[in-house]
Image (cartoon, rainbow, N blue to C red; front, top):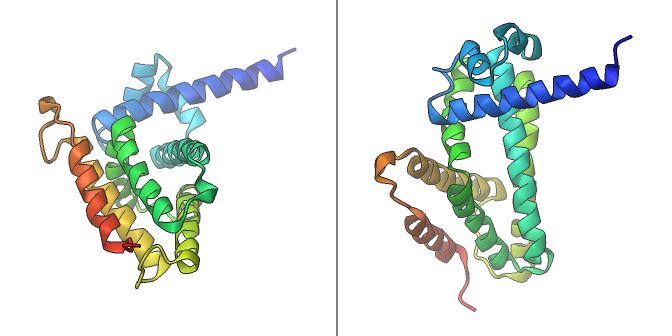
Length: 216
């Protein structure tokens, strides 16, 4: 009689191995260019197994993006708690939020490269709202976290905000992610040059922060 618990554990390990390999390939090359067969070969797992665990490539890509952003959120939240986030004022929280993008560039350039290709891929594949729901739910937690900044700003007045919460969040997130992603891909300087663009990101951070922070 088969041990169902061991079978489930084995399936979980296979799935994690395939996702890890896929992420490495997707972030080094591009999502479009990588085939299931490439992932299977690199994982030393039969191609039929990949199809058994993932019904389609978009399914795998969305699950992977969801997983990676949840992992990153947990990392950010851990830093937030250690920094005493609950006791920060709005300006301090905004600075922490901006710094999180710089830390993303420093520690997870692969995620930034993957993310820049992800949006284009899901649009090209015409992924439905239902397919995208797990991913959208995962990234929405960042907007919920940013809500704290906006709410505190209304209460403590350390930030001067004249736009809606949604517009402020989307604009800041888009600017920081877009620029950090381009730096991670080497679109400003080629990857082989190994140019660290952290200083440039700090400059961008201060430009954004200074446009909202009140001089008290």
